[in-house]
Length: 144
Image (cartoon, rainbow, N blue to C red; front, side, top):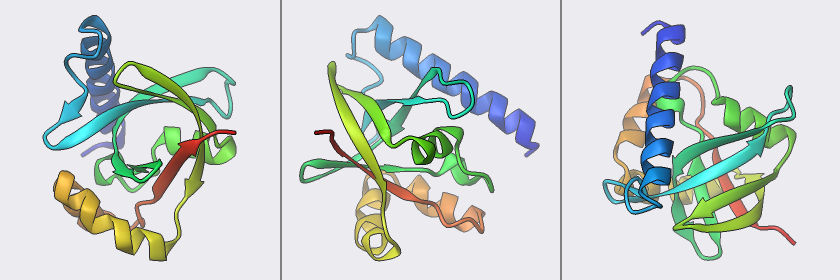
């Protein structure tokens, strides 16, 4: 698929998902299949403006694990690049907002967590097969 068309589709889907979640006060859009959804707000590395995106996550103890898949695109998602530039972020889960710090997980940690992520969202396996890029996993932990 043309990368520009893919970006437009992804942005539209994100906007619709966010609108449904907000309009329903979190009753809809808080899960996708078996996977829970959080809303991650990062600071744009170029604009300095807040950017919010809905993401599936895996609860792992006191961490929330997110996947920088971009649907198997050969490029990293912009939110991931923003998070690498500034690991301080905010998440909203079930109406609760929390300040978090992001850490990109090692290949060893990914090997342990990847099967659990694929279990809650099987599409991740196809995304990894679709791209030569190693899809990063990011741990979000409560800041402070």
